[in-house]
Image (cartoon, rainbow, N blue to C red; front, side, top):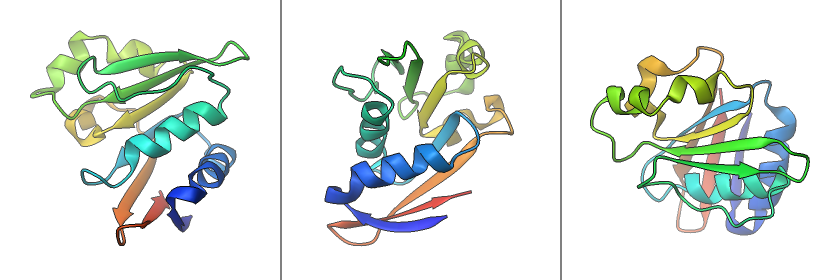
Length: 135
């Protein structure tokens, strides 16, 4: 699936993404400013979380709870230096919990990720438009 979208279309894109993925581990690839955090915040909202989602750049992971009682984990590995940091924080427990795991900068922990993850690539087309590709 490949889709071009603008900021005003993010809710629609998030709904479509949730409906069309076969796994709950979503890996978000893209350069800084490509919209990873913006899209993840909307996915969290669409999954029924009432709290305002924010980027876990310094904490590495934020945990949210949906109205249905589901847990959603949002990871941001931009600042880690070695995969061991993610391993030490217990990433495997999160990844194999069967809860939603939304991961920014997954390339920093690629050897720890399950093979059955969904890869999502975001690219900047212009100031207002992004391209999303699911693999």
